[in-house]
Image 1 (spheres, rainbow over the protein chains, first blue to last red):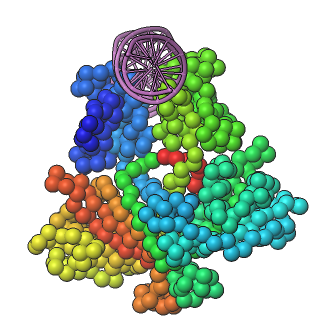
Image 2: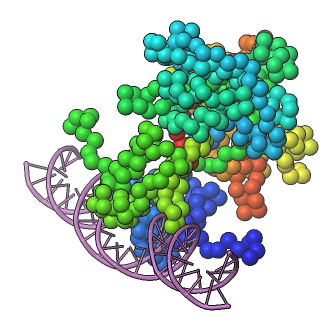
Length: 243
Length: 243
DNA sequence: ACATTAATAATGTATAGACATAAAAGGGAG
DNA sequence: CTCCCTTTTATGTCTATACATTATTAATGT
């Protein structure tokens, strides 16, 4: 068995790939019409459902728009660039081929009154767990994290030993979240610079994320994180896509 | 016709929505098994193809994983957060309800030798257009942009009057691109701060983007941009998704 | 006991046909 | 000419069936 042995792709995937190729290569330009289903049926010698599956997938992916009676048309590139926001710093570091380490700097239980309303809105009498930790990649500071966990939504968190388990990784695998709000900003390191080995004036990336989970009585806040990254750059490759 | 009149959704969408709801609400947790197709057929009183379409869509969306002989399982949340990188600053500003303005600060034709290889690799004898401009929102500086356009890939660009048309908007509507590479970083404003009305030490967001277009002889560079945003924050809301 | 082989249960792909739905195009009445 | 109605075309959904693929489980033969 050689590596080149990919095997033949299913027909609907081939049709999809063919058309995708035509669009990405510029042969079919935005606004142009794609052959109607019956034509593709004839061209590939298959049933309409097969063609339909391919075109539906392209439509789902946002590459084409389908209009009844009119046909299918290449959509103009609406760019939803993928990905930033690192949900799991441990996974990110390991994925970069470095060894991960963490230090728990601070841990406290806060009554609702002490939690800033702009970070998380808790019910009266609720409590939150405040964690402050430092992530290390190959021993060097990678990020500083301050996190609030709503103990009403995630009571199990109180018993977890977060001195070895990164809170983000633990939450990701234990709590389903349904909505998140992100903010990204550039700020000067200030007093936090020391923990990252930076000057106070050094520019940092600040990632602010709050997540909610769906409950019968509406969305309940799960966690709020603020992560500070030193000068680090995030590279991301995006492909043309309208989804 | 009232707004509430949504009409009944197609069955496969309803099935999909039902299961998605179970997952997002936490009733079905990551790793748990989803009823097999025959069970769903019975429950909804429909054909297997219909159930299959719903489950395939969920799998495409990354909410579930399907294994032959074993069944379908809720996947653990792999987060591909949507969107950052502002492809069209004009659209972004207008979308925020502000008035857009721009100033072309500099325009030059560069021979290939003068283009830094880390920004764009040009063929011998090729030329690039260098543009430097400032974007304004409601009259205030919004971003500083330095852009290179490969004239071999986009010869028409040489004749365009970029003193009124933002280069990003023009390129987006005239050149199909197929691949882009992004970088994001936080840096201190330095000498550029003045043009943005900032101190030299102020932290800025730097967005670096390079795009290619597919050609018969392989991908050809189209443009390389470097955009500097003052303290601005980008907000984005993401939903649970694995796509 | 162990390796090999067969049965089985689940998903994956595909077909041919049916009816529904939407929008464009055309035709006629006023 | 304009408005309204009908026709036509293309997509949207769904069914019932068939066979392919794959991994597990069970059976079998040494």
